[in-house]
Length: 229
Image (cartoon, rainbow, N blue to C red; front, side, top):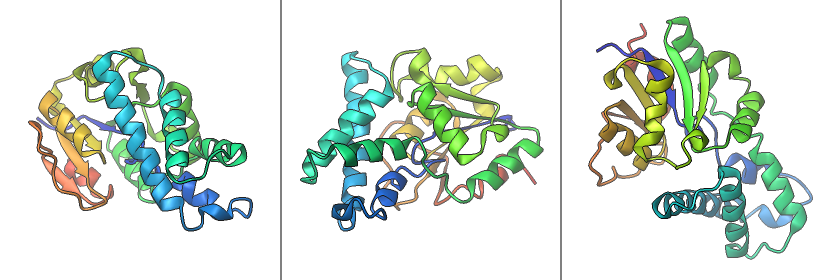
């Protein structure tokens, strides 16, 4: 079936999750980040994901902003950067202003000009996602921003992927789902979406039941995969 809807994960896929720590490291108030920001960003992201998975398994759901703060607190302690209220506040502020990857605006524009539906499906809370979309200036190129908060469980629970068809209709094979997270791409593939894993880090493919149909290193080729000439 031809692709009618392109759906993107947000954090790490459209938005650079390392941007907050990288930006803070350039600011004179936080010289301690100059050599530590990359490790801090990595630990912050890893714990953010781990906490979301654990909460999904245990049924102990909370919003993604709480998860993000909990993960940052762990990462700051891991990096021997806590307690530091000013640094914590600045990093959280910057997380609402994450930079989009350079190829994102043109890629989304091409999809929209071709008449495809475009959307985000993210673990992020609606407020977080709204902040990131506005900061990146890509709101006009998206038909919707879908948050898992409406179902109360984090990806890769199938209830999350259900949101796409509930919003846009059609069949699962008419959806091109794009994520930089291997586990998310695997979950969407097992669900039945045509799936792209944006493997920016060159990681091995996850040993999971679902396997991405396409593997890219950036988003620029998404229009071609969606059938846009």
